[in-house]
Image (tube, rainbow, N blue to C red):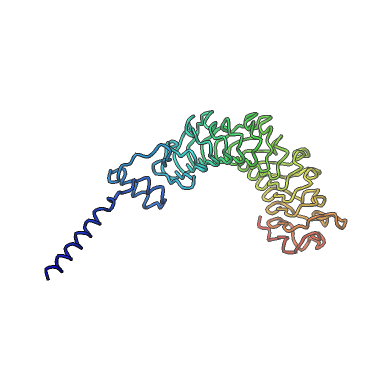
Length: 372
């Protein structure tokens, strides 16, 4: 019996020795967990632990990026939106590709706010209170292509924008003037959205868009009374909806031979001078709804590629048989797939069926009851 008990005792001592020889438990530091997971609940809990001192303090090597307090950082995207920030946070990782600062209370951009962020591709500053931008704020951002600056308090276009910029959205600000050379050096720019600014035609200085090769430009919801002069002749889309434009004169569209889509809806247009549309040989879509036209604009039958025309909510009382389609066979390359004429005083039963002989489908023509 005694030898058996001795054997058991030896086995227990061996097990104890083997357990104590294991490495001691070592808790990871706060930032190790933060970089492994971006779960918002766990992240906020860990932030509280770090602030209250319950997490193990750890000194990070200098090459490990920190994430600004309260922000989420993952896959080179830094999201700092909806945090009530009053300034651009510090410690933004240098390899950041997209920085989201929207829906905060930032009032000013300082010279060094984006220092070192040479890899930044996109920056969102939407819905802040920014009224002041240092002239050198964007100098470090040598590879930035997208800048979203809408819903702020800007009164002018920011200076020294990166030459790499492809798209800028500065609508819903307080811009009243675009100075000559405001977009100088931006040869890569493709898209500008600057609607909902209180700018008049006189607010665009000669040369304001000089050097740009834009495809897309929107200046909707402004104070325009006519089509602005000297816009880039490379434009494919021009949107001037929701302005106070009274008429389209002969030379207004003469520069824009590359236009595919023209938006002139929700204006006060009573007349489109005969021949104005002949300068737009490639036009696909024409939006003239919600104006004060009394007849279908002249020149539509000669537009070979036009396939969508919005004319609803005007004062058109009569539609002629040759208002939309050419007389010769094969002269039109693309059939219409959308013509809207509803909410006009014209009676659909008075329109000859042959009027829409170049329409792809009868359902493409939209009439309706006149309610004015």
